[in-house]
Image (cartoon, rainbow, N blue to C red; front, side, top):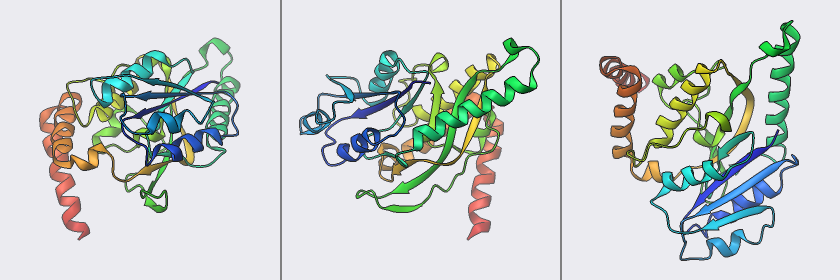
Length: 258
């Protein structure tokens, strides 16, 4: 199983090295690391080039999600994941554990099926996330936790799986919708899960942290605009009335927890 890690960067000289190092330290052998840089004006590319394992492309783009689409087009792995500057794979064995979870899941299906051709293909591999600060220090586990059984309907409860802990079969990795500026990743995860369901693919939970997520990302910096986009995305996929009802429940849940 080949894994493509896609790192999108722009003027990320203060955070890129931590990400590059975490990929370089992996014990798993079959990794493709694509660094898609938006023509940074600082030392981002210079730092990334210290790591010979990576393929680095630095050129102008139309923003974060356009660069991510470029990464999808270039990726050759069986599965792909986005690990942006400042984010890390949780441990040097993370990709080995993910590959082992995939192998175990497929073997279990094969054993229970008389017809090997009926064996399901994995659509998404996913796990837990830890939140870290700008120095990479652990702060807390992510508040939303992944369900044991993930479907596209799961995201009606919010983004239960962090983008950096979401490994998608490349054959169902659809392009990001560039009409969303801040929450295209939320929409993308739902659409990829829908696409996998069309092909009877199974989703596999890797029951351990697989990503360390930098707490101050673009969505955090544009929190209100991101929430508005997420409402629009939920209404598109789950219906307007259902989304309104879900948000009333979100507000009630916050109140009763105070």
